[in-house]
Length: 395
Image (cartoon, rainbow, N blue to C red; front, side, top):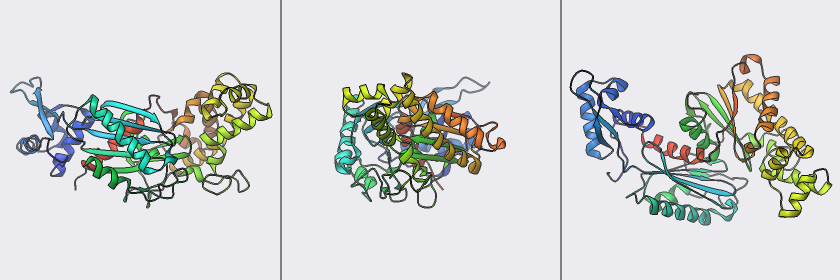
């Protein structure tokens, strides 16, 4: 494999995207897909082989004449995806077809600051090297839980990431791992993962609502992530619902996130436990000393009326925001993801009820509203898709 993952022209980039997304293909199949002459295709494929970007993979079945050679992305290709959350880090290693070869996760408080958190990322990459001693990383994609200047690769005044403002993540990671790096917010990378390997594989216009510690929205228009002018598109968690509402982490009052998010659910769970309205959460608080959104989910599963009321009220507020987005954007699918989505059907049912009731029938008559697939790799897979797309964009 050459030192850099660099196709020389748009034909080569197109061929590599096909091999990434569809796996090994014969030269005949590639010629049909890119619609170039046989001689032109041969030149470009042979050049990719010379560059070490693709490699032979046997012969295809005969079409009646000489059997066509199969090629695939070079087996030494390695991408790293990093999904930094508020309370955890996920790191995955993939091949050139974005198949996960190794995946590690550990608890980590993003409030510890960029230097400490990124050292944990590098340690996880080193652990992955022990399992798969790859010669080099060809690109790294990173998702972080806050607003990101996509052009600069830096977080910008992220509410739940003290100490990260304008920190040069892209430069620091790029120098350490000696490869290209892209940084985006965690919702966008999760959305890319769902489009590549999740429930949205055939959907070109969609919204992904991630409800975790915060709330955000990934937007796909015409098959591409929409980030807006400065990269802040989709920051729905700070849409103000009521000026006299609870104080939000951003400093304003009455934001959606202050009513329904991981930290808001934990706050409401503590109130229900201390007031005695939720015996289940009262017992859980006595056992653990601190309550989380996951405890609210457990209480809902156990049929606790107070917890169910908290979830219904919060989901209804979220549903009203989604209904407005649906009326404005008219997506082909809405996906609900993030840690709070683990509450499952009671959450989804309330959101669906509000959206289908409040949005126009033309916008919702064929609109699926679904939960993200469980498994925990959509963020890291999306991050590798982010960087591989960047490297395979020519002209």
